Image 1 (cartoon, rainbow, N blue to C red):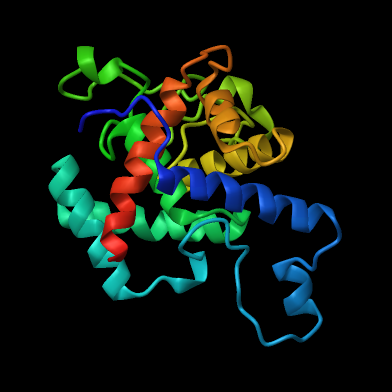
Image 2 (spheres, rainbow, N blue to C red):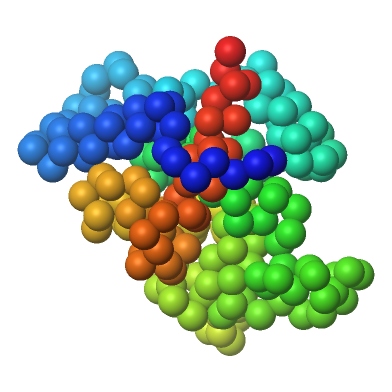
Length: 218
């Protein structure tokens, strides 16, 4: 897919909605958890994009999975599994699930779950994955997020499962959005570890993929 060098109008809408949503919660709005605790009937997740995590159904799963399978050339069941895990992580961290999927697309193309760039050298997947280096669908680097990483029986950081990786990646992204006060391109560049890039190439890559994923909603 050809990467655009500027932020699309759809992406601009995401940025505006992210900013408004975070500002609303900062001003004392009621959180989804508070709604549930108060006995309210709403099951709304914090909506920071055109899709709420609570809206997942099998039709949407296979619309998204079909698009991902076709565009990124992976098996349909694999893409459906990632869609479900992304919606689950997005609900947990109050994110747009399509944004989570777009980051996965940018980081690993939904298939390269070893250490960053290792798949270019290790065609057979024989090399052991280093959990402290970027790995998994969202390429989480354990050395920078030790407090979020799973541990083995000896207390050592271990590699994440697909579900753990997506959950931790979404957790990191949510923290960066809060740190950058809802500035989505800034948070994405922080996720990439390249905040100094004036062209925001990583953010534009994610937002381009986000726009493509949105087409599954129509």
